[in-house]
Amino acid sequence: MTVALDTGVALAAADRDEPRHRDCVELLLGHRSQLVMAAPAVAETAWMIESRLGPAAETRFLALVTEGHLQVEDLTLDDYRRCVELIDTYADMGLGLVDASVITIAERLGIATIATLNHRDFTIVRPRHTEAFELIP
Image (cartoon, rainbow, N blue to C red; front, top):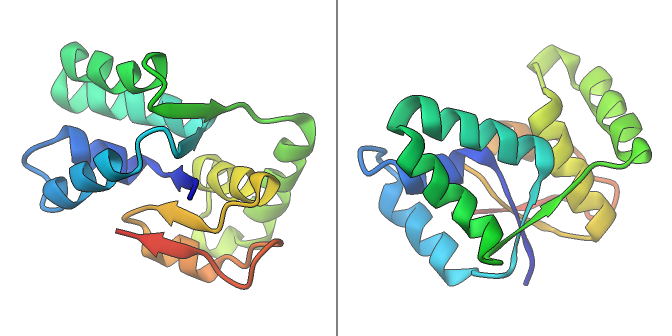
């Protein structure tokens, strides 16, 4: 089962002080090579890990990509159009590019499961390809 990965899970897995750290580490270990992350989410995650935990932690996160445990999916022009549509549609809740890109990539790849700690946004948004997302952990 392929899983779309959101920033919060990767950040919590990197930070031992996060309350959901253990759950997120287990999720990542349990889905090795089945994880897909939108490129904007990779950039956000790397920046947040580096700013909170330092460059060594950032390189450990990026090693997930270089070692093949995390597939990075770049956005196409159509994906950016879909992100704009989602951001406009859900403007009242402040859906930004990163969350919109996770949704867009999930739609394009037919992924119904999102690893996220942000249940609010991913519960409210109605994807095109499935009735609702399954949210883990």
